[in-house]
Image (cartoon, rainbow, N blue to C red; front, side):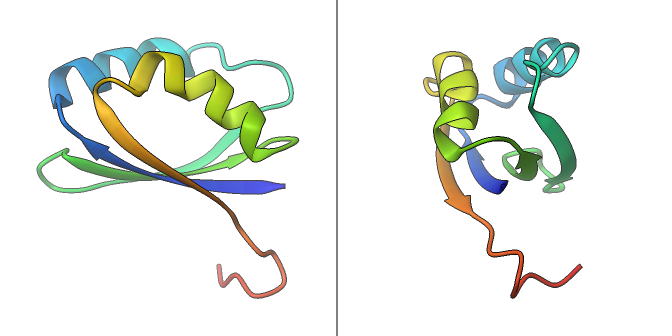
Length: 82
């Protein structure tokens, strides 16, 4: 399944440092497909492929939950464009 996440970033320096470390070795079964970053690095949208939203949330929230507000949602592959 595809999971999209919108990160409203409260502490860009901490967020991007943690993300860099986390993306170096994501768990087996998770793949990051795209990342769209706002010009000021205070908003980011990502597309992951994983078994479930819970798998993605359980990986990201412990590290990012205190420095960003994260909204997770399942992407409907039948209506998605691109």
